[in-house]
Amino acid sequence: MIHIQKKMLLAFSVSAVIGLGVAPSAALADGAALAKKYNCLVCHSVDKKRVGPAYKAVAARYEGDPSAVADLVEKIKKGGKGAWGSVPMPPNKKVTDEVATTILDWVLGLNTGTVVAANVPD
Ligand code: HEC
Image (tube, rainbow, N blue to C red; front, side, top):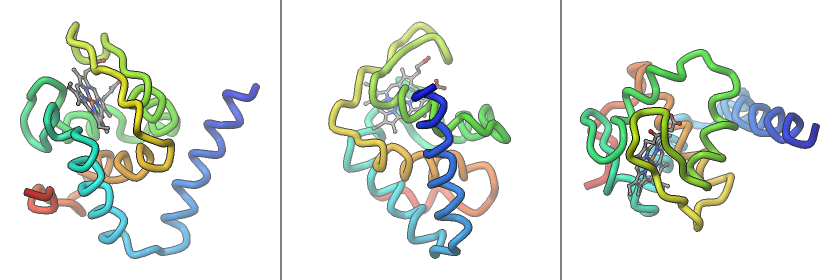
């Protein structure tokens, strides 16, 4: 029950950000910057498979999945394997729910045409 409520809360906070009309480009740039800051881009890139899947592939897989953010927040924090192959993602222990959600806003938006690879920090 607690688990379900947490999912709903996360889903709500994401839609609240969109609903309030917070400048999307600023939030998305934050997501890209946070992905770099937390070393996600060591294993992931926007377009190409590296150690982990390309973020565009992640965006395509979870398009229209309302529980994707909540599930992926947990996966990012705790790590895991099996969704893309046998190589595991290690836990990202410094990543908070807020950081993971912001990164996911960016990642899951990569298929909509609103974000381009150029938004990835060098
Ligand atoms: C050491 C390499 C490595 C790092 C660092 C890393 N990842 Fe991953 N990531 C992976 C691998 C490998 C997978 C595929 C896991 C699987 O097959 O289930 C993955 C999968 C994912 C997925 C898809 C999960 C799913 O179940 O579909 C997301 C989203 C993701 N990573 C985000 C992140 C974020 C955000 C960070 C930074 C906080 C990060 N990763 C850091 C290696 C990494």
